[in-house]
Length: 279
Image 1: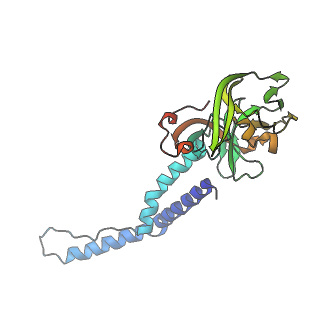
Image 2: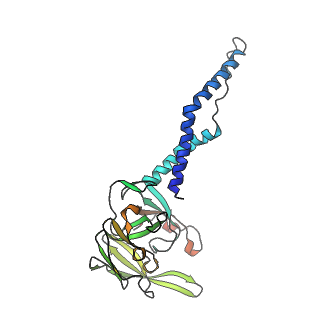
């Protein structure tokens, strides 16, 4: 189930309990407590000046609802409209993002959307070429994917012989050494690490020259859609496989690594990655 929906249900339940109690029961409890106090006052000796009132107590369910409602409301608003945390589950964005990187996604820079309904209500900006974007997977919208924006609406995109071509212009790649993608026993998967620049964004990509290109078609990006690719070019399921990302499926722009677990090296906190901006 969508965590935003869980938060929304919890918000509605705690708010409803609190409101119901205020409307129908809180005043009655206060009057009852006051009457008990008055009866106790009558039994005191004259001039004693001591008032023993019954403590005013709320039902435990109401007390918890009042305590949790503002906390849930704050978390819901922050996750829905400001920033939302995500975990990277796969290596499709290597070397930029590693498995078990925990990232933050800006929820308002690409437009304000209603939670749960995913409907944009305020236009702010649109994705730029080179942005690392989180979106709902078009084939199964309950899943969130993260890829890099390569093609904008109206662009013509081709990926052939490991080279990206946008609107007839080849995107130059600069060799940047090798990258050990993984090792199982004696088998090592070593890829070529290259620098690529998409407009103002310079980033690393991985290319495995031993693998054929996933697809070599020319793609014309429709209006209101985006063409996305993983930085780990030969090990990414992206727009070359399943098509374009509709604007309505955008979640936000990834911008910061707030925590990282060094899964590739057997565990432990990857301190050197914490606090890095996502390029």
